[in-house]
Amino acid sequence: MVAVIMDGVKTSMDIRAKLKAEVEALKDKGVTPCLTTILVGENPASKLYLRIKHKACSELGIASKNYELPEDTNEDKLVELINKLNEDKSVHGILVQLPLPRSLNEFKVVCSLSPDKDVDGLHPYNVGCTSWGKYRMVPCTPLGVMVLLNRYGINVAGKNVVIINRSTLVGKPLRRLLIPDPLQMLISDMDTLFLNADATVTVCHSKTEGLKEKTREADIVVSAVGQRPSFILTGDYIKEGAVVIDVGQSRINGKLYGDSDFESVAKKASYITPVPGGVGPMTVTMLLYNTLLATSIQTGHPLKLSLNDLLQGFSTSGRSR
Image (cartoon, rainbow, N blue to C red; front, side, top):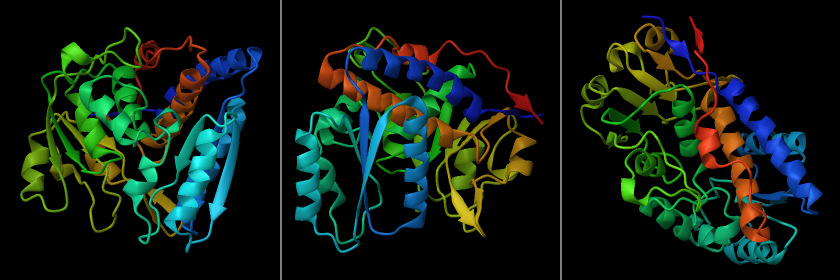
């Protein structure tokens, strides 16, 4: 079997062209969407991710600002800044780059965000909406995974899915998206459905026993460990014809790797996402979408581009190898 490579770059560019038109339409109404990011500390990976996000904003015409705070910033100072941005009507999206230093309580910080400006979709209100199937801001990586699956025509209904991650950013929200209640699937108050509902999902993690046995039974494996070389998803972890979504990112000697041993996995998989060029660009694109959605919520100017347009409308057979 020769795996189809799911091209996140091409898919992202297609979506971003439509998002750029939305930005221009908002500007015609006197509104310039604005994303503000906050970085605490000197984490090199976080700085790199923020540069990528701000570059993407610039390319679409979205205004962006970045606040860099020292490692020893206390919670009160950080929350004070967030409250100031919550009240600033020129700021439509706020992203606190995670992880925060261990001295800070991430939950308390996330709770201080306005739910309408929480473009990471981590505020308890937005998490609750996702759990109920009343989608507002959905975490960017899980949303990007769902869009990529839809755009490649991969129907997960009835399929066994194994997610190797239980985090608030990836594993938990992705599970909710894969098994929504069909009676509660209105997205962002629009008449739109996730077409890839009704999977059977197993969430695994570092303490899971018999991981390889579980992944070998999966039709779709989503790996988001990011601890290479201590964990590498090799070909013997998957069954013939499985779909492999590689969300993991590890930098070794300046080079970016995913969780998968690409060569061995691609020989057995039917579809696979590369690293780089797979889920990463989709995550950034969904951040841009959430920023525009937040702008729409706050200004009352509806977007022409629905989530249904993101989930559909793109035909590709991918690249095979």
